[in-house]
Length: 350
Image 1 (cartoon, rainbow, N blue to C red):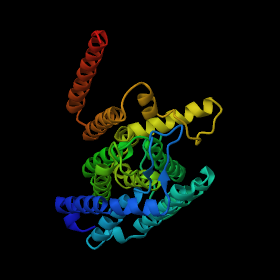
Image 2: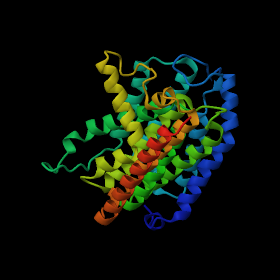
Image 3: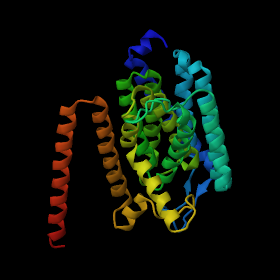
Image 4: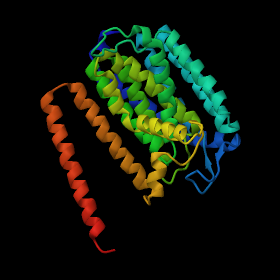
């Protein structure tokens, strides 16, 4: 990679973010028209959170914003013209095609899985793998590189799709995760991944104005699966390349909410003898709304949780015990204040 990008020239990062943001926000009305023309409309249903018809191909604008920024950066970044990166793009297009088909025709779960498996295999075979994993017992995990990478890509691709249940939730949480990854990749010295994360954050934030409650349009599987896929591959290119023992811990905290939700709901469904891919109202955002929170308050609460875990990831990555202690004390005090506030409000007369 060129010397300019090796030095983390912020002009490239800001330009990439701005390009993705601008194209996404400009093409969202187009995605809305395409949704209507293709009859890709989200209709009220028992487990759904909308009581009105909403266009569901908003993911097209996210993809257009992302790919447009990548196209511009390709002229300046040699790493964007490698076989590894071509594999990433081909995988992304496969994910997008499956999402569009699902949003218009509704694919069976096993058919969506085939598309996702194909995308993951292409990414792995073109050289993108989790290769740096150091545990207390062994220092060589290359034997497990392919299966671990495969599971990670499929898991994260679906994790974002799982949390896409409230207006603005998936876009906002992904933007937080992408910005966190951007910081982590700066710390680990992975400028290509920094650019990917910046572009992803720009695409999400460009979509959010028309997606936040009450949403004019939702991203559908086209957007949710694409965001999860890009997050997965970006983290492999960035964080997993720069850290050893802490890699798994750091990435888990960076994207704790979607990872926790997909693990929790999958275990719950299996324990209740249900298919782990069968949709229901058991997700965390559903539970918050069912407990009485408004859609907006539930989304803001989950934004807050995502920001806290993202901050923890950055603190761990800094590897300074003083910073870790100060952050731990701050979070402990914050939790105590929230707990006391909750107890007082519960006692106040209504």
